[in-house]
Image 1 (spheres, rainbow, N blue to C red):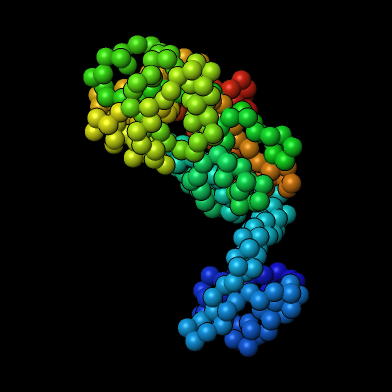
Image 2 (image 1 turned 135 degrees about the horizontal axis):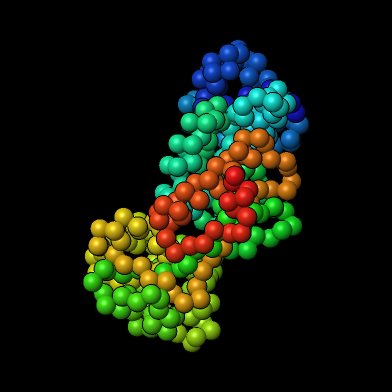
Length: 315
């Protein structure tokens, strides 16, 4: 198995047609067929189902595709790093974070990269913490922003900030006109819960409710905060989340966010220990810290406290 075979395989798996893949690779179709056949012989498994319309990847091919894309991306970054040890960082870098956090951080980070490091190619993956951690270990992302404790065995994490978890409801709801509320204050309130059960915000909320012997009245479960806030604005109930993604609705007098006493989550930047960070990844980590400082200082990231040392590391 060599890199040329892997590149040919990835292009064919993407195009699912030998002719189109050969054109993209600038090689003859018989040469492409031979490379794929040799790869199949070495792996001992069929990678494509040939038919009149093209070539469909098998289950074995889909497994190989995920790993081959990582290998090729890592090799490219290695080549770039070796050639540009003293030049401006460049090359691909993939960052994963939750959808709500991506809505907050994507713009300042992208703007900073375009202004200071235009040769870095950023890809942002939006998903939740359990999947993000798995992607980090598998090499699908180079950097992940995770909520809660990060197992130190396979990943190195750097604390970013601690964010309070809030009850979010209509602005005119008098029960939210306090500096904070207790978990028992949620008793009997219809709740729209987001994210993944037993993870992140949901885990903190459910554990606190269990300790306080409070039965949560979950009326609907949704994946994204965007759907939840529409339901809250429509009078369905409250949701429990961070205040930062709904700051515009708070400023416009549509929603209110009140911290729930004792509920908070630490956000950390994490990278895999199985491979050294590229220069692009190191630059991205510094820019994330810069963005966090700017958002907190500017009041755009409410109800949170920067981790000790963030300003020093960013500076």
